[in-house]
Length: 162
Image 1 (tube, rainbow, N blue to C red):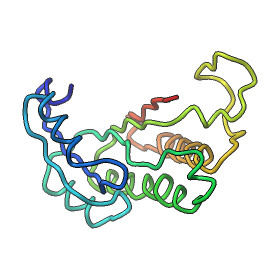
Image 2 (image 1 turned 90 degrees about the vertical axis):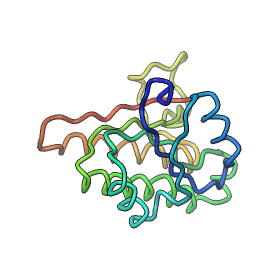
Image 3 (image 1 turned 90 degrees about the horizontal axis):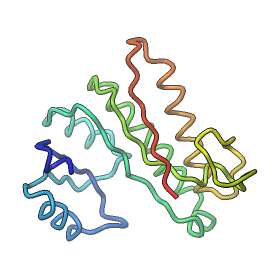
Image 4 (image 1 turned 180 degrees about the vertical axis):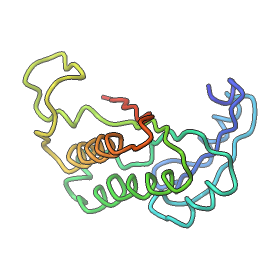
């Protein structure tokens, strides 16, 4: 939809749980090309290069691991990619003066819900797996970052996904 709306889209992906084919499909649906950089969100040099080469005004952040079962087997991977990766991205955004971020979180941040359906104001933090905990930690980092924005123009948005 961003391509169809006329935006220039830059995609950073290490292709660990996606493929170049999916990017071809996005371009076909969008009707115009996008800029693809193969790299990792945890690599500060890659991020600096992207922000230096492209006029980035906003970031949509989907770069994370997202399997509950796998997170039980590889918790450090989830904290490294999801938490450290988001921090590295936010540092690069801050250096580049970019403050608009859309983050895709997860309903796992609610843990075992106290009631259903789960509204946005439901208590979070009682997570039951490393994936949910990593997403909750990222939400906390982003809330603290938004609160610290000295420009008073914080534009951090959260998108919860089931």
